[in-house]
Image 1 (cartoon, rainbow, N blue to C red):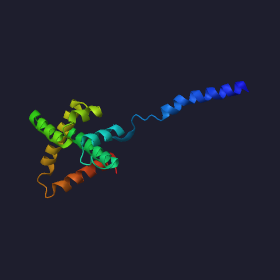
Image 2: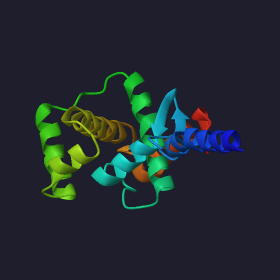
Image 3: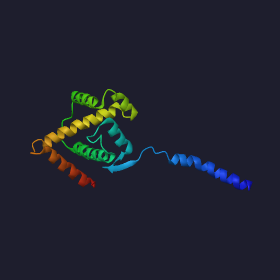
Image 4: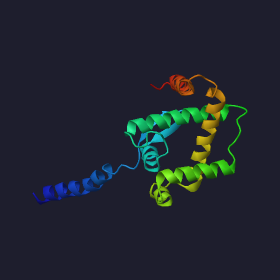
Length: 161
């Protein structure tokens, strides 16, 4: 009887750390796009830092924006003849972002563990995407529709709905 109680106690004690560990969720892969993972933390960062148009929306909308962005950036990385944004353009975009996010921009970056270099790279890619869209779709009768059609084609090629 005593041995049985000791065994039960031992089993219970051994299961406590595993149960606590199983409840701790650090990050989850939501999608793989072009060989790169989009994590739950990416959605949280985009939402907190207002990095995508749907930042105020549902997580699924933010995920779609992140997918579209990854596909478009990968495409323009392969494109030739794009001019890089100047440091002044990136600084101007940073000011625009700060006006959107508010006076606590540095605190928000720190809270989501997003570095200055990460933000600068994001803003640089924003500008690169805008320049590409202007070059490719700027003369279309409906440039927004043309860009949306392009994104749909990129999603189709990547096997995304």
